[in-house]
Image (cartoon, rainbow, N blue to C red; front, side, top):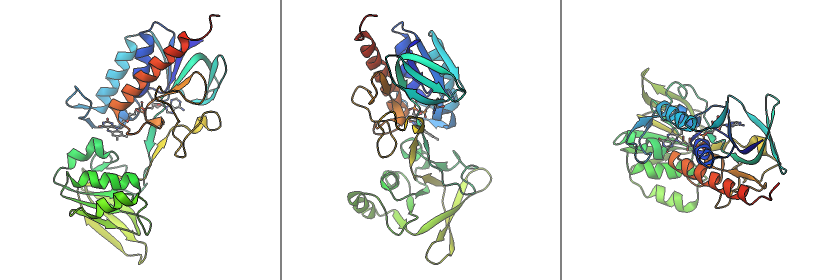
Length: 306
Ligand code: FAD
């Protein structure tokens, strides 16, 4: 059995693995795709101490750092179930059962996509999901934000300070964001809000985005907007489906954790984008992974001597 078994090989899982292995305890990492979301990221310019890098390079560096230690990496394996007990069981989709004295869940999240023509083609070439990450790339340009919930309205307010013009597109008849955010939004001179609008296509010149079409849901008319960037803000889905019924999740499906990364199941910790931790960023996931790992070690040294 492992002392610590980490599920997830993104920044949080990698940090947890390094911190556990440095304690000299038996450490394993089970990951569907080692590297995580970073693999889909083009430019990273906000990882403190690394002025600029790209996602694939960062992912390789994560893996190399973990491999410097005695860590058992099980890549391309998906966890399907976690069962509590004095030895915690992690079941995989391939039918294996791994046992560990403690477990750290760091399975991350994924952005909900709008699934219209152009979205996949221009991802990272004008189509973006993270205003904290990619906002500065659109300095002085025209962008649209799709989604009028809290994250969409926050993104529009954030971007309005950087870009020339923001058009927020909401599918419903009203924005769903908190009233205080809506008031802030409407006070900004370079933000336009279009409601009852269904995005139908993201256009580009073959290389980068140059426009967006939406259908006015009241009249059925299709309109086109010329712009350079589209931020899709229709939700971040935590990869926690396999924990339903065994570990407490928030209404949004995020794993509920306390200040030390404990979940509701004894001996099971969680870190990064899959948890209730606010703000989903690499630097935060790394810190959370380290924290959960230290908390798991703390838990292990308090277990009765066998
Ligand atoms: P993830 O990176 O999501 O890793 C999750 C890991 O768990 C992966 O290895 C995955 O394969 C694995 N996994 C999932 N389910 C299972 C399962 N059932 N069993 C086993 N393994 C599983 N942040 C920044 O700070 N700066 C940026 O510039 C930036 N740009 C971004 C650009 C894009 C396009 C995207 C999508 C995100 C960006 N982010 C950026 C956000 C950042 O990537 C995340 O906050 C960070 O990767 C979260 O780390 P994590 O380890 O919690 O999760």
